[in-house]
Length: 254
Length: 126
Image (cartoon, rainbow over all chains, first blue to last red; front, side):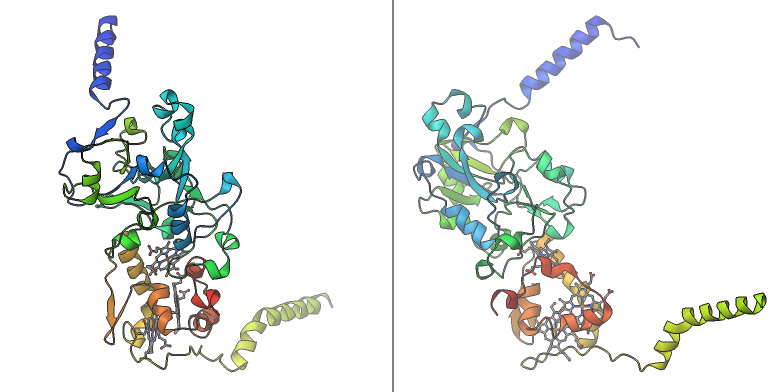
């Protein structure tokens, strides 16, 4: 059947409507109006920007995490391995802060880590099932299955994943290695696992515990009485690249 | 002349090819590996015969429980609770990797890659 001009226009109009009715281009979450429901447990975290942005130069969260998980310290920025680190607000939120905020706010730094998305693009592309979504919202990595293809790194919109270009043990001093957590090898990808080893045994993520400013709040997003939901209550929050519909689990409290 | 040299060369070749088998038939069988068993404890996770045959299956089960199913419940061995962990349990009783795991694997030319990531404590604290 030949597509007439009229039909094409009609179809075009429908697509336009879909775009309008689908995800918003920018999203601001109102903590008081969060939906409840879904899985009984959804691990998530809030970064209280009012507190975190004031702690210039602080990297206690990253130091605690990288120490416990045997993350090597590699100076070459292009080949570095990171689970949690600090970046400029303008780069974390390019489409909002980056475009409209003043230079001072744009250059202030706060923490970034794996967003533990509900619809994680890295999980969709992983050919071996090494990266998978847990029922409780954690995007987990099974190092035993990683073949180092790096599809996940290409898919992640947040750059939250690192590839091991070198044998990480070359960059870890022997007495600093934590023997209770395995290192990785050359040729595998790694990222934050939300401290699954601690959450599974009733603990809290290490970064949350290491933060002296109280800027990191972890909790069950689907439980209206959780610490996290109380922190979100009555405030607005941003999530990174929410327009992609990945449903990130890290909320940046304004 | 020509025929006999062909016979000689093929006989030498046959002897050369058969030599490894002849040597191994004549020499005494290599002793089975003798892993050093722990002295302060009596029981393993499963009976010894089963461990000898299937410890790799058990390790893979633990790995999948912990990493893929998030099931980190501890296991009881001889009344003591142990984590489902390579370094956190196997190596707590079998303290010397060289005198235990490596003795068997060495004799078998089997080299599991686990230790590229899992930290053998002695490497850290001698």
